[in-house]
View 1 (cartoon, one colour):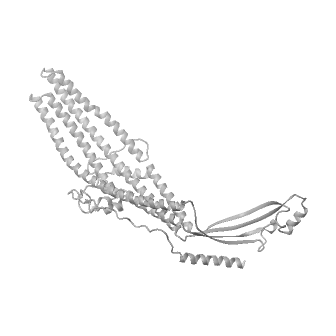
View 2: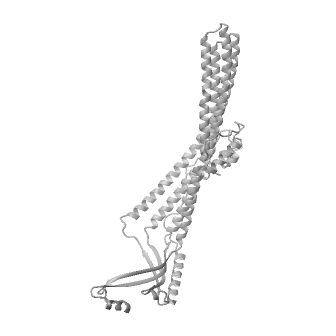
View 3: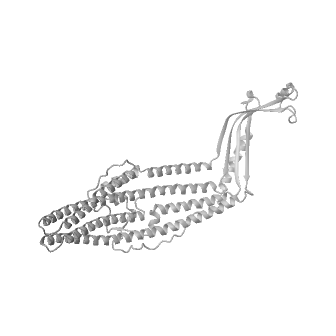
Length: 488
């Protein structure tokens, strides 16, 4: 018993010294590569943007002002199926990372009860192992078998010393993968917010289009009544009535088509929020749906590295690939395993717990190194290095694409504002043309074709303005997303 304690004490002392002396880590520590970033975004000099708070840092609840839209986004972030799956993936990654920390400790197992019986011939070996089995052999007939029994229970342990930091490199890899999962969840959140906002803006646009179509139908009804009166007076032919009726039917046919699109869009939004198809309440105002101020800036390009979930995810993937390369390199070096067993063992059941005579103990230490593995370890290490290089290229690509995406969004928002101003002037001019055409037609200075043309132009102008307004809203949301906004 004293000898066993000495062996155990010596084992733990040697292990402690080995751990303290262990400063051998193979591989390279992660260093962020140099990323291609401009001094500013192309289009950042536009007068539309100020130089105070960065748009990407604004919380989505502060960015959007419409209460109905906020409720829809909040519901989607809570009930969306893709978001729920991302949260479960995050929990799975967390459990795996926590389990790897236990690899620093030895694995321990216990055999509660063990029994076996082995039959052998009388001539097996040099002789019986005990008087008990000698007696059994003497009584056994010639050419018969005798048996040998063993009973025991024990506790055993196995411990791999992390000489080359394989376990710590694995922990770095799992941490990077966990953070990558977190960024994947953030990217899903950003996409959900963008999709809900765009869907809501599309609903408002479809509502506005229906109002335009209905107003145009009413205008055509008024024109048709006037033309019928002139037809009865013999001033025009039946062709004028037919063409005016066709114009009225064209405007009226827009209403059921738009109602269909509204129902489909409402169902799509309800699906995003994890609900069954139903109608959706609208806000009271089409304008000022989100933060649109001179005090908002684009921020510096370096901020998109810290803000955009996809870029952060790519960098964590590079970290994981770097850690995996270190692991594969360490697999080519020797490994040290320490093991031991302590328990009781006997040949007869009645002597099973006859202590100290039945005590069983042992300590093992193995230093093993791979010599020839059919180039498997070397190939795995070389592939891991190539995967790390590939992950770095993908990070560089993602950064360049992000900068281009922001620049495209900036130009889109700015040019759409110019288009909106021109579209509003076009609408004002078209409405004035309709008014003048009706007055001239009543006075006999214009034909019914000029009235129909003016009304058709007014309808197209109104519809184009509604679409441009929605595109501008979508463009502003795309700019917010491209700057990394929405996941906070």
